[in-house]
Amino acid sequence: MSNSSSIPQFLLAVPDRRELQLLHFWLFLAISLAALLANGLILSAVACDHHLHTPMGFFLLNLSLTDLGCICTTVPKAMHNSLWGTRTISYSGCVAQVFLLVFFLAAEFSLLTIMCYDRYVAICKPLHYGTLLGSRACAHMAAAAWATAFLYSLLHTANTFSLPLCQGNALGQFFCEIPHILKLSCSHSGYHREIGLIGVSVCLGLGCFIFIVFSYVQIFRAVLRIPSQQGRHKAFSTCLPHLAVVSLFLSTDVFSYLKPPSISSPSLNLVVSVLYSVVPPALNPFIYSLRNQELKDALRKMMTGCFSGEINCLCSDV
Image (cartoon, rainbow, N blue to C red):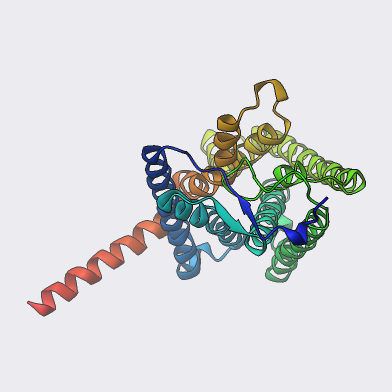
């Protein structure tokens, strides 16, 4: 029996054929560049445009940070392995990947729950919006989300890598993921302890999900009572991006961890892991920018200002 300290490195899943390796590299490169550009634009727009200095803008900024964190945690190493045809990741690198990915995913779900509360207060209790969601309250909620995610990730990472590993060091995944590490464990007590932690996590996540559903039931009831069609459309347009992001996040995560074993395969596991760890961070900014008029105006103003500045520089040089 060998424990985790005797394993210097893990082996990640990389395609055997060179053509597929290059295809993976270019695919990851395209997705990561799109995610970095889109989230970077949102961060710049929220920071620079005073019209976006609102609770929703503040939480959107935090959400973009979690999206960037998810992309930067898994994709660079996968691109490196695909480009150079290697499979290894160091033990410390694997620990860091697990901790950071769980941290950013937990923070994202917490922030999405808080953003649902923001929409609930804005539509159902508009007269109390400034009181319930002042700058101090928003800062405290964001800090609580990040702190909770940190403790949650620390607990899972410490428990996972305290398990003795005796089933080799090959992970059937392009990044280090807790379920695949648990398959290498030979400790039944530690395995059941981690399963218990996951069960508690599912209960907490289910509680957040119920809160989101209940909030949206109240939101839709309030919106349907708005007399004007234009008012209903405006209210719905502020909720649809958040609802779409929550649906994308939950559907990919739930399918990843609760899919039937009968349909499980290495290739499907790889596709599903990309769906929940890479695709949402790349799509979230586009979902928000398509339906949020203030954000679209801020991005348009920023892009127009940058373009005008370049034209002025070129004219002055001439």
